[in-house]
Length: 343
Ligand code: WQD
Image 1: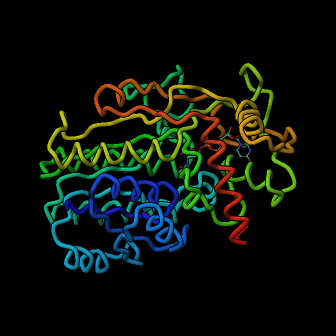
Image 2 (image 1 turned 180 degrees about the vertical axis):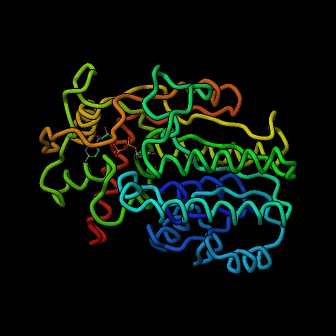
Image 3 (image 1 turned 30 degrees about the vertical axis):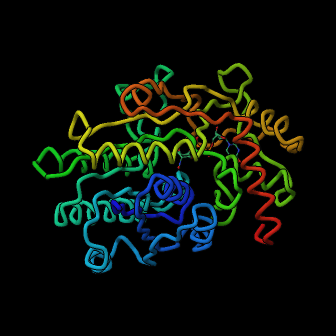
């Protein structure tokens, strides 16, 4: 069984990817410092797949931890790197934390990749690297704009570090996956998104409002140059996203990549506004979401959505789950959290 290391694997996208890797027959090893997730994810992964992945409670910043992991688990063929801090506005307040955590972890992992002959490296990147695109939909050849946050800058710098390392002759290949807006939860409602504290992202705040944890959702602006005035995003189902990671790591360790570094936008190709999303949630679940129009949020992109053709044609990946089903999955997960007394 081929061994894959998933860093940040108890987190939102990491745990869903672990499920799909196990379903595809891979042996999964997770390392996570549990700074933004809990080990409950391991129970969920096991309940869904019947397999409990090996888990190392550790920090990818620590080289000794990594050295021990690679000696305890020899023969790791691929790495999928989710371990990073990811809150845009927090990165503006704490840039050093973001540069240290997101870049040192990457440097450590790349050194391990070379030292231990890992064949393939999948990097969790983001549509944030495009900034405010001049043209939508966004392709992989769309210009990279100057980052609008330290978080976005760490993604741009990380992509450059990986590319420079490979083009210096390092004997591994990489795939950079640029996510649009990951949303939803596993249809079993056994794993999902569980941000620490007050959610910054739209969907967790929306579902917490729908269940009564929050009083009302603030829609940050309805005076943008869009059809209904609210921002437009490409909301991609997390299970669809997870499946793309399996396709990417398989492509790498089976030596099927055309280039030493390949880049894929992971989105549905559909731009959906914040207000449209609220309507979709309400019609899919039958649950009203109390909201008010609030002032614009500093740094928000007005509209960004993907052209997924490259991923469709080359990676063989396509988003399949509808936005309505995705909203239903997010709501079922929120209800599960309530049943478990978590939220
Ligand atoms: C989406 C839209 C808000 C909350 C960021 C990162 C991206 C990724 C996802 C990590 C915007 C509006 C939000 C709320 C609202 N990061 N909104 N009320 O900013 O598109 O993307 O998070 O994986 O890399 O850039 O996501 O969910 O914060 O916002 O009206 O309470 O929802 O204004 O238009 P964003 P988001």
